[in-house]
Length: 159
Length: 121
Image (cartoon, rainbow over all chains, first blue to last red; front, top):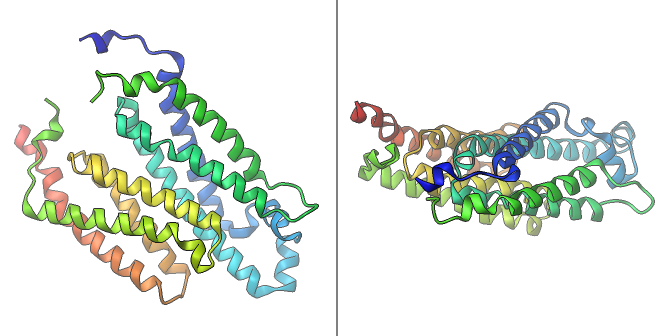
């Protein structure tokens, strides 16, 4: 009974909302990439190749097609992962399932790896692509919320 | 007692669950190694993350008989089916086989999830 009346702090009560928002954002960005491919965010291509999508299409149509296809597959992965994250947030994570807390550590880990990858793929002299900044922000936010909500998921009462 | 413990685990359910779990685990390892085949790291990170989520969902809530886990597992089927539509490479045959096997397994496990309600009545 004690666990039913235990007060949750701000981070414990809002952590599932943060991950739900992240999941929905992944769905939206993923859908955009699936529809528009490499044209969805030209800044990513400019950062990696120094060329706009239109320039790349005119100069190297084969490379353009390959990168466009790749971006569409990345969009598909983002969309599907967004669905998984959203549903887990709304169900198991919201209820306090311990396994979901451990699983959600994948988000800061994968976003941090994405940030490093984005940094490394930048051409010298080009500005960093938007995913570098958004990934950094989400990595920090998710680490903060996961750490400060540990009590809800790791207490003896759960599971 | 939670409702998930009422799920009837037939041999079919057990076999299909193991097959689904094996496919998702193999997919995880395969996607980790994508950079070795010359694919971009970003693609590997995305696919690996997606495969790990799917593996965890199949390993825990699916096994426990959570109905939402059955529904969301179709995401794995759709996620593997999409590359087949846009990439014309020989390796997509493996995805096609995985998609078919996973779809059959999910359909075969459906009674275990949807019989639960009748048993509770």
